[in-house]
Image 1: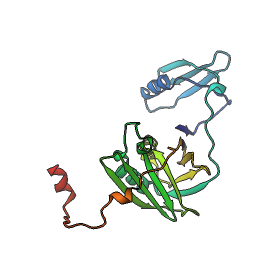
Image 2 (image 1 turned 90 degrees about the vertical axis):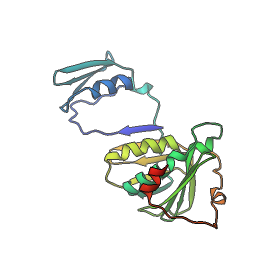
Image 3 (image 1 turned 180 degrees about the vertical axis):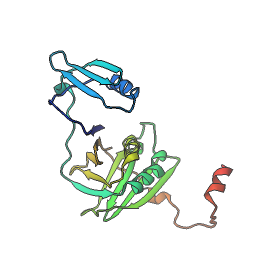
Image 4 (image 1 turned 135 degrees about the vertical axis):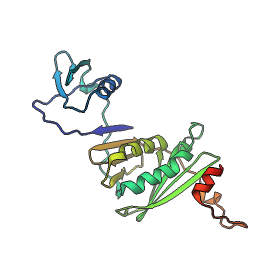
Length: 220
C-alpha cells in the first residue's frame, strides 16, 4: 500500500528528500496551527522545519532510494460518493479475517456491476454484505478482493473528503487506485477466489423478526 498526498505551499526552490516517517510525524504533531517553513540541504541530506518557536533538523536519504510508487492509469474506473463508500466500508470491514491462514478472507470482495458495487467480507464465523450505487457505471463486470487494511485506511483518509472518490482497477486486477481530492492510495489486491457467500445466505426462513436497532444493541 502506498499513499501520496499533495499540500498547498509556496515553493521557492524545488527539492526532494526521504526522511523517517516517525520523526517527521512526531514533530509535526507537536506544532501549533501556524505556518511551517521548510528548508532542504542537498549536500547534507537534511530537512529543516521551523514553526513559531519550534525548530527541527531531520537527517534523511536521497529521494531516489525511496521505493517507486506503482502507477495505475488504465483499467476499470468508476466514482462513488464518499458518504456511501464510507458507510459501506464500515458495514463490512469488521467481518474480514485477521489471520493469514486463508489470505482471501483478509480482504473485502468487491463486485462492480453496472452502477452497483457489492462489498462482502467473511472470516468463517461472520458474513457482512453491503450494496451501494456508484456515481459512474462500469462498462464491464469486475470482481476483485481488496485488503481490509487498505479499506480501513481509505476510510480514515475520507474523513474530510466531500467529493466523490475515483476508483481504478488495473487490467490484470493486481492493483487498485483510490483517488481523493489531494490524496491517492495505491494498493495491491489479494489474489485468489472469494468464497461464493450467496450460498451461505438462506433463501427462505420459518421465523422472521423485526426489531429496533437501539433496543437490540442494548440487549447484546
